[in-house]
Image 1 (cartoon, rainbow, N blue to C red):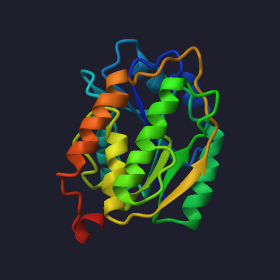
Image 2 (image 1 turned 120 degrees about the horizontal axis):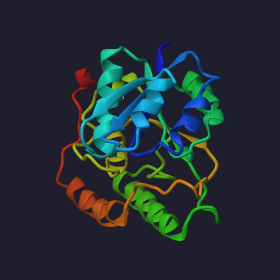
Image 3 (image 1 turned 90 degrees about the vertical axis):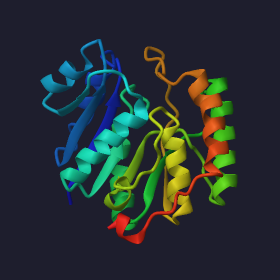
Image 4 (image 1 turned 60 degrees about the vertical axis):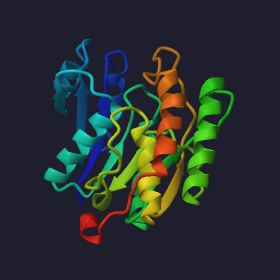
Length: 231
């Protein structure tokens, strides 16, 4: 099977090399960095380490970067995509857990889940709990962590139009789209890490008001996919 690791990166020069070097135990996986308009040389760092780089001339948002990566994966006939952040929040050793679960449940979307422990900043803990609760309520499916970007998406689903949003809320709305279509989820526990040296690019607007607007709008959208779209 052909697998790909997809890393959206925006001004991630301080952490990107560490993240990419941590992926050396997985030579069977294609690594793709979507340089989302960085001005700090993030793309050059990735190229120097020998990974594929897709460049946005300007910052378009995490959702746009993920969609660009999914389109590339589809064109390259990748069987699955593992998404990771560029800020060292996602320990690469847990990729093995995703791969093991994917072998057991090849049709499931795998979601990294963190504990809302003391390591998670209070405002993140609140937004994480609220978003997980509301998406669970909206979909009738238990969602433990709606904001974690450490996921495995099998081929049938990254060809779908999961969301038209370009920012961080893409990841939350994509859960609604997948759940509405009956896609199975499986959950991979991962540590709760917030490296002090690397500040999150998610703004208060993205994590709160943006989510509220998306959530209300979701009741007026049709997320149903035609069966042939998932082939």
